[in-house]
Length: 226
Image (tube, rainbow, N blue to C red; front, side, top):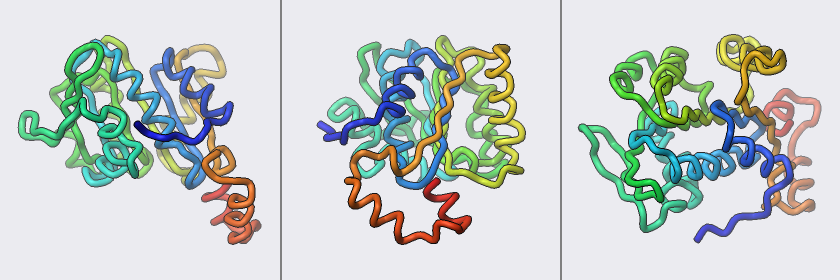
């Protein structure tokens, strides 16, 4: 069994909202616990989802396996310990997971270039988790949205470290959903910004020591910590 640190109120609220949200985005600084929070939320979704086929993706297959499947002992293979195994599904790397609603197949894919797009075409995915989504190719991310349109319970989970405001992911994805959600035209958008201060596995003393290793006036500090 995984031994989690306590969750802060912000993390708990994000996980609870994900149960009735179709687009879940965890953004923020390094070591903020974004992966772990999204993995818990997505695993709860997988365990109850009625669709069989799902997708785990990152900029590369290796990134998807490291951040989603393994995640330093907090990944899918640990959450579903003794209920999952690696396999090949139609020639693709995958996890076969036994859940409370039947067997799930989670395909593992890279999305770092345009050539990745055809590899996820032809399927409908019940849910998708893309880690470091803004490192992936724009066409791949847009195809992820398309591939989930006919899911019985459409669920997308993204995590990302901040990029420059002009980055295409803000311009074409987050900016749009921020505006449409605020206006009430789109529902089910669950966004939260996390920082290392939300990570309760770190003591106040350790957190202070880590922060003191940065120049607080630098872009590096703003990007990695704030």
